Length: 511
Image (cartoon, rainbow, N blue to C red; front, side, top):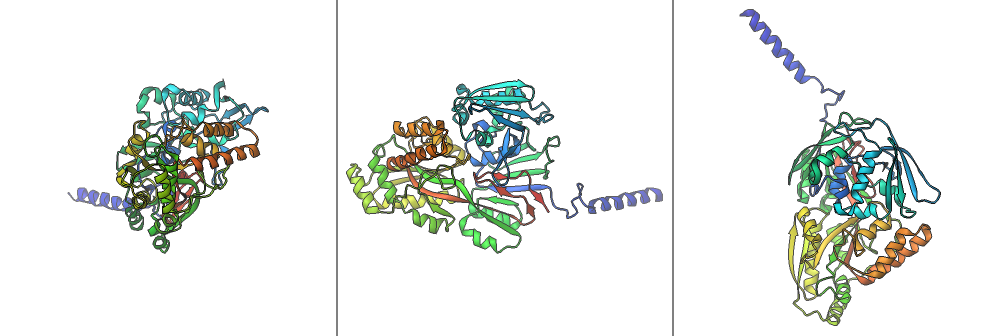
């Protein structure tokens, strides 16, 4: 009995000793290797080529590697490709791949996988959201050898490399796509440093470290995206330690959070704008004068000063000033009387009912801005039926060709930082994200010319003409250009955003 008692005591002491020792991995400070990120909405899909929203892209940057990527300074650098060359005529780009990289299912990353990924997205029959991003300029993908792939281009395309660096260029495991089919967006397999562990819709998405990652090993054991639509709730989570990072930070909380020495606030330039899509196929906004009228009806300056607390600027064009090809064409001034005059000229009767839709929590202060616009429009004589949506359902509803909204609050981050992608998807007749349903042949011709023109000075002139025409056609209520604001615990290093609003978490370290 004495011997048994001694053994039990010894076991207990050893247990206490083990529990009190530092965690494995050399983390002497005992910091958790789990990172919690509170976001305004959840990912829509984890299929890079079918992704059109920022939250999904933030997730896909963890799961997928691309041929090339961006560094902290937004400079193009190698990723799965170790080097590349462009032919003298600009119509062929050849990538040499690094050897030894594997997907999270153990299959090799090779030229066949790259070809499979891009053949899939440029196949119109697959109906992927990012078809136009790549199909417009890629003619053919060639497997030159096991680790060399080349792209024949339809024309010299200036933004080609930055487009391959886009998150939508993430390379899939062909084996997984063939097995999962249309469900691949819920069961992704890439070659990135993290892999999907769990997805609880409406609550959280959990990523875990990929121990076989070819590059620098992941710094975190897990990264969890928590869905927290309520702005103030995200701030509280950061203050209490329930979240390590929050995006976005509600404007009214920024000054308070800045006084907390355990929190850091980043306010950085962004290529994202906010606008109200006007459904140009439905009365009364099939009349351009009615569209121009409601631009005069909305007080953008007050939105920026009061609702955004100065963390934005009034939009002066359909793209922001950080996007290559930008030129200011001027904002519509706030002039309710001018709005009423144009509405009368367009034959819009006082009391006309409008349906206004908005996501709630996806974009910073989206619901509050939509409610303010509702008041502005009521002040010039409209009756406004207001509806807020969960973001995934909102996207699906606004894409419906038979959608019955008149106005829908949207935002676009020009993720290539080039006017081509700032305009082509959202304002060309065939654009996949053309929620205003604008169809203007003159504008289509300008955007197409800008894409296919090699000379930078000529391209800038083309885009200047396009921006002037867009203002005149008024397919949107032009609102504001965002600044990107994130908050994070001061014990974190290497938290940063690219200008295109990607939140990059691969290199985050907890001290």
